[in-house]
Length: 195
Image (cartoon, rainbow, N blue to C red; front, side):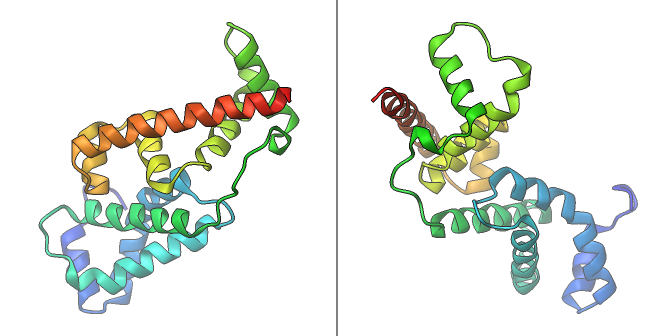
């Protein structure tokens, strides 16, 4: 179903009238956007399919509350982001992250980053990606979210504000503090490796 031929407003109206076919069409239309949000913010130990279903369930149970003040896709994006944040808050955070928690590749990448002025090779990109996410997992859910949106997904401050409902000043302060915490975690991890 192409973007040009899909009548989102009409489909939402039919869903509100309990049209099951329209509900399936709506899920098919929104699934790529929702799965992208879930994959970018997937909490540990939560299956992406389960989280995606939970988001769609919330959307359907709240669809009659949709006022039309924002585009429907933005409204669903907010539900998705909020659901991911809620799961990140609920997951038990480990009190300490140790060098021993790293895979051999991740430890090599971290060591290379700390001891070399050269860039990490392309072969270590996956290990670097996993290491970044392990470090991000140590942050509070809101701190992790702001760094993912700004630094990893390269969203603008306005886009982050729209997704999170935070004002721009709060986003800037939270990002600054989150980056400091991330740097501190990185330094502590390196100190533990040498002790």
